[in-house]
Length: 166
Image (tube, rainbow, N blue to C red):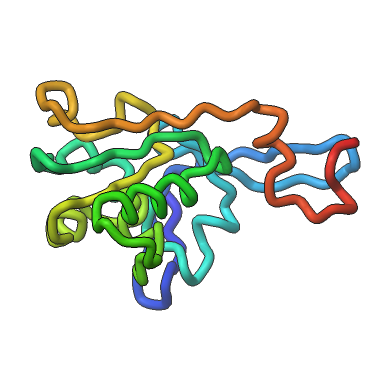
């Protein structure tokens, strides 16, 4: 069991068996970690702005749903942020941008208690696997927006123009 500091005073504990090396054809590599079958770069996990993902991901299923919750579910880089902004504008009935960041309503970045403290109507988003989503979604009539994007587009999303695929 390893432990590393995150956000200055928090520690992240993880098993060495969950960390692996991903090697690329250009000779570079990146350390990855699997948290409940969800894979992240170790750099992402240890960034100052990233909270301790491990308890957030492993406890997301305990979140209580409200009848007016909207869940946006998608793979990373599929357009979650755009859809989150549009949903907030539709719910608020205005074209003003939400001053909160998308991450403030992201299941992976907040504990169930922090998500529960958000006032209704909540637009929550996630990149989690279906089995990791709150169990209340199975028995409720909440709105779920699933975003599907071409995997080829996702693979180059966010790359500098010099590295984009032809």
